Structures are given as structure tokens and as C-alpha cells.
Length: 123
Image (cartoon, rainbow, N blue to C red; front, side):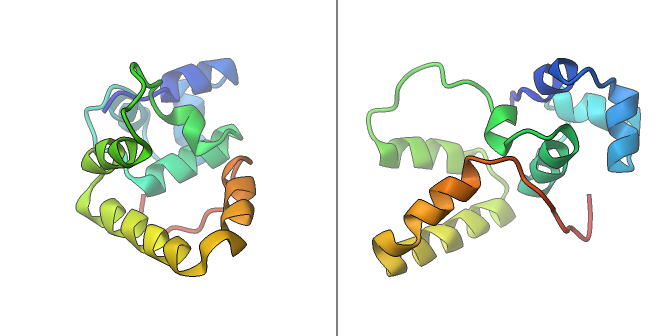
């Protein structure tokens, strides 16, 4: 998967080695993530976004063409995710559909800001 980790990292003036130290991993791992040689899970995106003080969306590739519909765009993005991340997205979508418009504005506001804290058990 193409991503913009390298672009975000360089914009912040952080080297691969510097980012690897922030994340507790190796420079080689950062290189693999930037070049799509390792799967980029939602957890990795959250950790990297937090370390660089950017939004997860800032790490995703630019869309080349406008999708025919929102549903098509969601399906295209979901197809690129791991089975675990697809399950997470499905759970969030189901929860949003059950509560309607009462939670959507808060979610939109939260997703448009950089992450503050992320707790993960594994990289």
C-alpha cells in the first residue's frame, strides 16, 4: 500500500532513525513501512500519526480519482485493510448506523484532530 509516511516524516524534520526511536522499533522497519514492504495496520498508522503529531489521514495516499459513491470509496479502502482492521471498521460502521446522527458529529470532530494517545499491545 502506498502511503505518505515518508512525506509526513520529512515535513516534520524527523529521520527514519529518529522516528524508529520514537516508536521503539528499527530504522529498517520504518523503511519497510514507508515503502509498503510491510503491512501498515491501523495500529501502526495510529502510532506513527501520534509520533509525528499528524492525523492518520495525513499518512494515507492521495486519492487519484473521485469514487462513484461513498459506498464505493469505503469498499475500496476496506479491501486494502487486513482482516482484523476490516472487522474494526465494520464494528464502527455498525455502531454509527445504530446511533444515527447523535454520534456522527462528535466522531467527525475527533477524527479531524491529531491523535493524543494510543494504547497498543503490539507494534
